[in-house]
Image 1: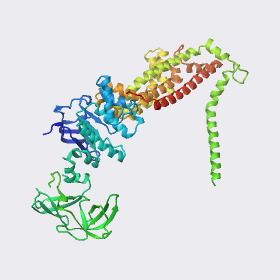
Image 2 (image 1 turned 30 degrees about the vertical axis):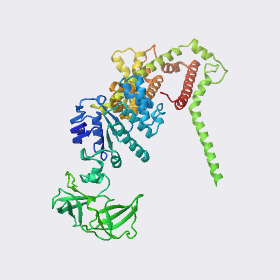
Image 3 (image 1 turned 45 degrees about the vertical axis):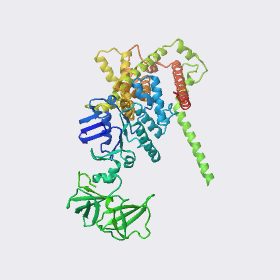
Image 4 (image 1 turned 90 degrees about the horizontal axis):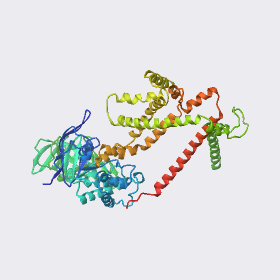
Length: 362
Length: 276
């Protein structure tokens, strides 16, 4: 069993009357890359700031390496933060920025010099040590911020949307670099983002948050393939969600009737006959054709076929008014807008979600 | 077609230059007249009689104007230092802490700024009289500090509002306690604000007439008050000489400042600090 390095238990946070964090439990394992993912205002940054000591929890316990830290100031905690706005010291050079933490700790000058050099090499900023922040680009400032935090050799590095201000290309590049850095240094990273793609690319585990609680915690693969709640299914990637009721559950195969009797099947165990269910299918997993397939009776009219770069996206309007999104790599020659088509998928591509609060079952 | 547009643009340009020239003439003619008359060999300045340095001579040998100038400078510098310190601390408190009646304190800052100076001077005079404080240097200094503080607080509050709070958080996060953070991060970042509020306070103090007039004693007073009182009994051209010198010093200061700034900028871009 891996060691837990940060533990939050029953943490609550109020900002005035606002209950932003609700009975929050989370165990972060040493050496992992954990991402707190959620829409803005879900409390993910607040969690990070409470671990850093920049915000006090209203109630609950926070432990870093089995030691309670609620009464410790930010400067007494063995964690460091990379801020969203970089928060570099504008009146200091790159060297002075990176050396700051060591200077404050009164480390001998010679050692500081060596360690700063090491950091500069690591983040590939040799030659920039004499520059001040306003003479550097966003990506370079970001590297300084990372080096400045890592030079203290923290047990945990907290990153608050560190790539948010960078352009797409640079962001992708920095994602890979950060991941590489984390693997190399073997430091626990707690990463906050609202970008689901970023979370899926970099994380060992993702905690999807909404309104101050963890909706689902798991590996990127698990979370993408088996979202536990409707919220997660909608937030991570795209999903088509059909409301329905289970009419039979045999041999791990569920037969479901939609709200107006449409038939569909999917894999799933632990569900009971007669139980209401939400059936999700990813746009890239669903298919359509002019011929119906056994077990499915989802019928609709093709409303629109849009070219979105790498794919063609088809919007199909079901008879009950629901719109279904389906992505395909190629355009069908024989299907045009206005045609009536049948929608179906492989049984393993559909996944069921229990109504509110329950775990997903495969 | 193009020629027509070109012609119109040229006309516009000429018109613009002329307008700028007129504006500058409007602003600087009075000063120029004063400078010219400081060299006029005539006691009463109605017409030009001849060139002379004698008013400058008088200023430095046989005039008490200089002592008023020194007193003015002394009060201005002291008032600046005191009000910047108090005002900066006040602004920090207003921006960083929550307390009762904060809104009231924040808005009441503007009252001393907009209140007519005569009212302010009169009320200060009444206050000092009622506590039996002798009028003179201390009274003037206190009065100047009183009206400078709100300006400093307002300027510093603006600077603080524009300051990214996470920079200070970063310092704490990296292991610096609050005191270290204040001296190593907050204060250096506030320097531009401190400079501009110091400049503001100094300017306000050095050319204040109305309030100083109320609280200055019979013997000690500032230069502007002295000049004003001299107008009543007749101006002497050595005032022109003094004013000319002051304008020149100011001009030199501005020129030196811009040269210095340009040099610094050049140095900053060429001479990047080296560490290894």
